[in-house]
Image (cartoon, rainbow, N blue to C red; front, side, top):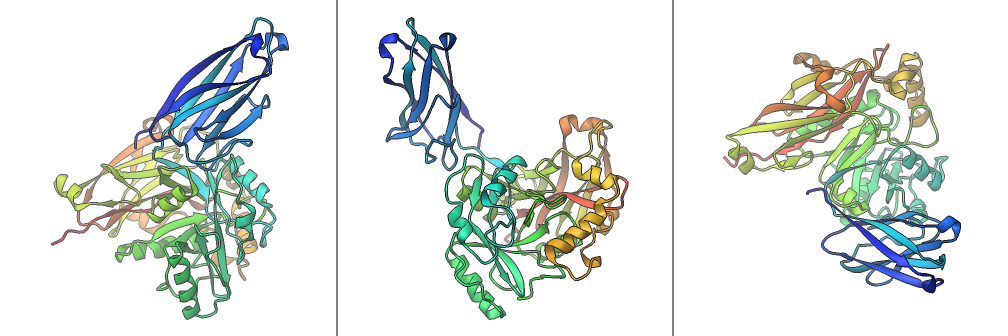
Length: 494
């Protein structure tokens, strides 16, 4: 979908005779619009002029900020405080002006309006966190503030075995979308449930049969089920993987060995022909040096800035995981199809039986980008870092020498592992990555931190997906900086 913004400038001269009246400056909304932004300014006449502002939809007044704000916005689910979020209806809208104090010669008001049309984009968020509603230390407001400060667009509240966080967070917020969630936490494994605020009726499951019934009921209500940190030594998923679920949390908190094992297992499932969405989340409980909201970040491709739009994107597997909100970001496309999509056979045939792949790399700094299929590692590229690139915070911690030890301690503390060896950082690089020589991409080729790579894929593959890894400076710790879900390829009918 094309990116579209329509801009207009409205002007209204207010005379002295209109003082202490309410005025309307109309404008039309035509077609699909998901957000209205307004900013105004006026001749203040040395402080003699005071003009208030608000907004009317075709149906009602949707907000008023008086003279407290110079700008505001309303959207489908987000809005500036004092304004009501909701679908942006077509028809005549109006900026409301309150002519509180007007000088003798009047004042000129200029209003800039931006109408944003729905467009496909990547929305970044965190899919796993806890608050004071279970064993976390964050209040919901503090968690929202932390996520917003980290540059996230959405958050999923997944407190253990309780639904109260979903009711508490039900009010709209101007900063980020809130996805309803809960973490089903049993003595035999954990699973996140998204999308239906009260889908989990009873968390007391102790047998595979009970787990099957509970997860089946959740999915029947429209809930989306992700099995959390399934291969962690302290709290693995023990009910079996033939139970109803939609996704696997392959990336839990900072990158470490339990995530390495989960990605390897997921690759085996994909190679066997199974379509299984890979997710990740911080599992943040409290302010911590290493465990932070958005570490990892789950970016979701959607054309709707709504909680349901994010959930629909997750269901389709249109998800890319990054170490941090501002870390390496990869996309994989073939024509009009991208991450999470099924490339139809007609598109393959139209390309002469080939799969032309385009890999867009953003923000890589010495990363090795690897292209995987059901056959294993197919190609890799080493993206050189610019000589003057400043170190990320986590890289500076690593270079200082204490990062690996802190990571091991974080694993013990957050997951309660009985011993540190199994949750220690993974050794440098994936073993398979050494099997295919990497193509060197000079830093000069990555203009503005971006580089585009191309690869001619084979039509007999089941999927293609991407990974990016970086070795922390001064250490042997290899960190996954980005991981995409697959672009699937439709099989031939023959």
